[in-house]
Every structure is written in structure tokens, then in C-alpha cells.
Length: 256
Image 1: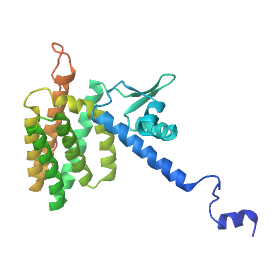
Image 2 (image 1 turned 120 degrees about the horizontal axis):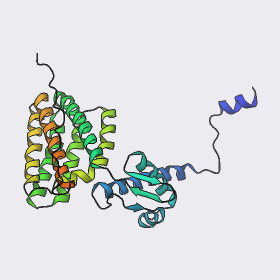
Image 3 (image 1 turned 120 degrees about the vertical axis):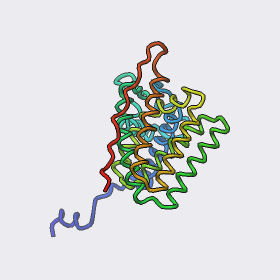
Image 4 (image 1 turned 30 degrees about the vertical axis):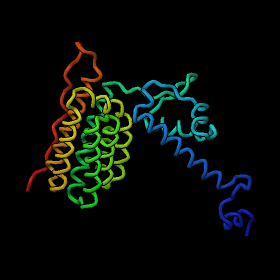
């Protein structure tokens, strides 16, 4: 047996200078740093255009710069930050035109998720969705917009995840991260916005509980389109506001 064959039979060569525990620890730290920065972006603690520095986040989270640097790269791939040469890393600014495109894709993805989920939804899945709706109700009663926004995001995230299509969910997660600013802004356009939003979520939940796929997808389409229209109201200057074109109508599957 040659030396190369002996090496191959013995398995992959491991650099004795590299501690496997250090590798795992670094990967875990990167995920923790990424999740914390993403949470700050989604919840609005970090605003679009804010600059992120490795040193600040390393000190804040008490980690080395390596995991922070890798977290920045992951967030850039997720579309949440941008890396400008010779300037640094910034929370990404999503234009209203980009948001329109994202809302259109989001509507299609959530409609598809509703159709998938309605066919197979069980009592446990319904209970999880109902818990998010109850949390929205409690946040509304407490006039807590931040808590409402978190529960709102959790409801839609759970709905899409429960549909059971991994690629659909992966695409959806990227989109909703980019939409986080617009979704929060849309909740404060009118005094009754959260109450109307809660009613819409309840209607979607009822349709899913009845396994009415067509109704659930239609209600979801209308809900997403309403959020898009409120985003226009929140983000366009008064006097320069133009009505947002409605999203393309949902296409019902033929009934048999």
C-alpha cells in the first residue's frame, strides 16, 4: 500500500494545531452574534443606515472580532446589511420601490404556505398560531406596539414554517428581514391599525382551522396588500403620496 493510500485509509488529515472545540465554539458564537444583530434590526433598535463596527459589537457581546466579522458576512448575504468599500458595514436601506417588489413576492409565498398548511393543519399547529394571535391581542390591550410587532412577525413566520416546505421558508425569511422597517412603520399609520390587523389575523386563523385553503390564501393576500398600502402611507411624505397599486389578485385553484 502506498503512502497516499495509507493516508486515505486513515481518514481525513486533521491539523493537530486546530482544536475542534474552538471551531465549534467559533461557529456557535458567530450564530449568536448574527442572531443578536438581526434581532436589533428587526425590532428597530438598529435603524436603516446605522453603521456597525467590529470593535463595538465585539465589546458589547464580549467576543473576539472573528465571530463578529463572520456574522456581518452572514447578514450581508441575508440582505440585512451592506458592506461599503473603505466605509464599513451599514444596516441596509430598503427603498419603497424595493419594498413593493418584496411585498408582491411575500404575498405569493404566504398564499402558497396557506394552501399547503390548510390541507394538513393539526390541533398542535393551530394552538401555536392561536397563541401568537392571543399575544397580539394582549399587546393591543396594553398599547404595546413593539410587542404587537414581535407577535405579528412570529405568527407569519410560524404559518410559513408549518407549511413544511424548507425552500419556501428559507426564501420567506430573507424577504421578511428586509421588510422589517416597513412592517413596523405600517402599524402606526392609523389609531385603529393594530385592531384591524388583529381582526385580519383572526380571520386567517379561522379559515385555516376550517381547512379552507382558498379562503385562507385570499385573506392572506388581502392582509399583505393592506400592509403594503399602509407602508406607502407611513413612508411617503404628506402631499406627495400616491396610492399603491394593489397586488395582483390571488388566483383560486379550480374547484372540483
